[in-house]
Amino acid sequence: MTNGVSTAIAPSWRLAVSRVAALLFNRYTFFLLGVYAYSLVVNLAGGLGGVTVFHEDGRIGFKKEYLELTLLFYLYCYANLILRPSRWQAWLAAVPLLLAYLGQDIYFLMYSNVFRMSELAMVPELLGVLSPLMLALLVVCVVLPLGYFVWSINWRRPVTVVAGILPLVLLIGAAEYFPKQYLAVYSRIGREIPFWSDAVSAENNGRFMMLLYREAERQTAKATTATFRDRGRYDEQARSLGAWVQEHGNGRNVHLVVLESFVDPTLFAKAKYSRDPHHPDFRRLAAGRLGLSVSPVAAGQTSQAEFELLCGVPAFQELAGMEFNNFTGAPAHCLPGTLGLAGYRTMAANAYKPAFFNTPNAYRGIGFEDMFFPREYTGDDSSYLSTGDTSTEMGYMFDGTLYAQNLAYVTPLIKNPQGPPLFNYLLTVYGHFPHVIDEHKRPRVVRMLSSFKDPQLERAANQFFHRSAAVATYVDGLLAIDPESLIILVSDHVPPGQYGRKSYRKLAYLNNRADNVHYNRILVIDRGKAKKYATVHHYDVPAMILNTLTDGAYCRERSCAFTANRFVDDRRDRHEDYMRLMAHASE
Image (tube, rainbow, N blue to C red; front, side):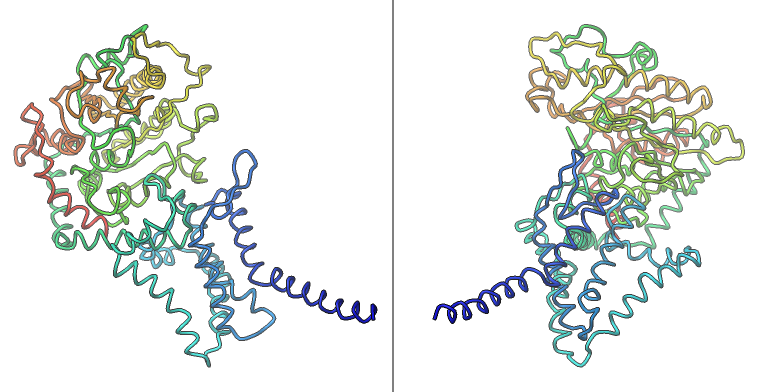
């Protein structure tokens, strides 16, 4: 009897183990493990993280990309369902998903930018410039595997094929045709989408989810600006303005420098310091003619300031998030685009990562012919920029390092009498929150002596001393080779205080005037001399540049608020210009 019971239990136990093993060890489990492993490998290679993130301290973290994993798992199950049974079925079902991920990750590794659907329009151009070897690799690694996948589909089950793909079609259709509703729903069920980084957003939510989210944003922007879109007339007006500037222009070089959080410590009325936070060379350069410019933002969102400074319209932020995030690379004919049409060579040197703020697409749409980012962030050996050792200052490249490399790069271009005039744009990153200082490289020289002390703004004051010295050295170097140049230096926004706006109130920044945290320093050097305007907006800078390049003709034919020598708040008057520009930038 006992032997009989044992004999009966043994098969049951084996059956239970077999069922558990079948449940745990199957193609679907291995697929999910493969997704985690793939994410880790790509992250270690310097690409996007994802469901697996490798931290600098050696830890492996896991993101909660539930929506992305659900979609991936569904598509893998669907592929297994429609493929004809074979020994390769489990592997073949993963091929389209693997290639879709690889394509986006290779794009990120090559261009340091997160792929968007709008960039599919660039595929024909890319195919046209690929070498025969690269085209052959593309056929072998992409076309043939996908072709074999399609050939392996069991087309005798059309209902299954069509019904299974319907949820994906509906999801894409919702993003394309009902974008506002899609964004509203996703904002409730998705994970954090930081405004400052496409890369972090993709890591938080997944590549496919962010691909659809950004497409919904683009479609929303297109719908909002549809009545302002007239590409033919818009391009013709831009060409006409470019030709006019070329005809009336003096051909002077322009250097526009946007400084991260370059707050002037002396503007805090109730702050006292152990010494002047302005470096003596900077005092000499400014000659008491430092001005003020109103930024659209405070304490962050640099791209909003860049948008106004380069495009000449207020950053109303009325579309899908920040303006830069709406750019697709389509010509928007901002200041660099206009100068390009006027015969200028337009170049941008950005001291930080291109994945921030959708910068490559925005710069391309704005009209930059050349874009340079540090090699450490892009792996692009053709870039002249290198951060140097930034390990002790949170990875932020010091301004002086950027200036020295830029000066070395533009010197032969400026000295070439046959070369085109330059529009040389720089964006610094040193001085970024939380203002970490390597005191071996840049000793603390300023102490805040006021009764209310803000440690962060004290660090910013010390950085200002060293940064202002770097500015003076850079401007002196430019003037030595280019005494006729126009040089404009402007802060993007003020930094956050240790206690937020309370710090600015307690220390009486600009005597606590209305909207004081939006006021920033601007310095205009015209033919070697500092020139002071009444307070301007960031969006006045393009008109200031065009007016200087045409010896005043630009503002004689157009209304320029800054020429009245008084502050004019004309934001609402620029709204239609803003909508028209964004209508074409988001195409």
